[in-house]
Image (cartoon, rainbow, N blue to C red; front, side, top):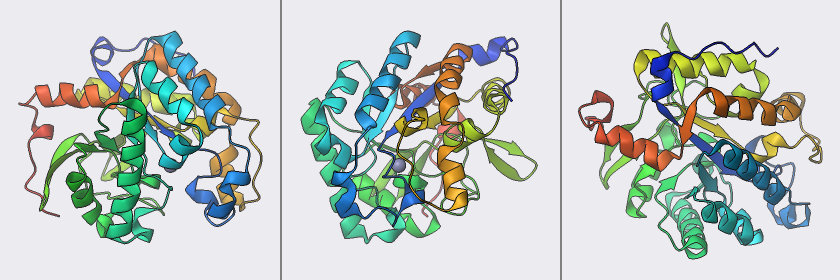
Length: 306
Ligand SMILES: [Zn+2]
């Protein structure tokens, strides 16, 4: 299904896109919620360390740094993987501690969860953790209070609001490019996963199942269009388990199995190709470059007090 490469337009080649990885094991994934009780996670074979090492090799080969949103319980079980990510010059950010969807938690429980992950990651790396991504993009219209918690806990950016319609996440009316969100507690930069606007609909073009399941040409077309026509960086995301065709199979429903297992063997080749076709760096530096272009209307604080 992959299409042949064509020349990337010159304008697209000048935009640096953000490469982000949500560091979790195959059994942490939200589509498997309830299948494996949390108190049994420790009994399952962990493959996140080896799979993350594969990503580190791929990025090293391409000369690219990325942002790794690490799950706190992964940092606790295999701290060495966090140390390797940091030692290779990548940004370490937080994916929370226990991979609980935000709308399944009270604000006080969410605060404890993010604080625990931030403390763990900062102790391991000796560096501040500035960024957060919620499990399954679970900052939605009913969990905007989570942004106040993140501001209060010292995060400077969030990457949890997906501006699409989806059964589990999304705020379809939210901005498609990085922007400053003003809340009662202060302000925070929001870095949405990338979409293309077609008619009145936002379509996801940059990562996860959309990268794995759809033909590579979809992602490539979408990022080129974003870079060339809108002059904006793509924010791309992937998980270490998406490069692991050998992972143990869990007995989920048909749709969940399709979303999780389809094309696992194709991801590495596609990712290497993506890194040849476009420029990438970590999210913190991409956001800093966006803010430096302060005239850009997308970074002007929005009059939102959601
Ligand atoms: Zn996750």
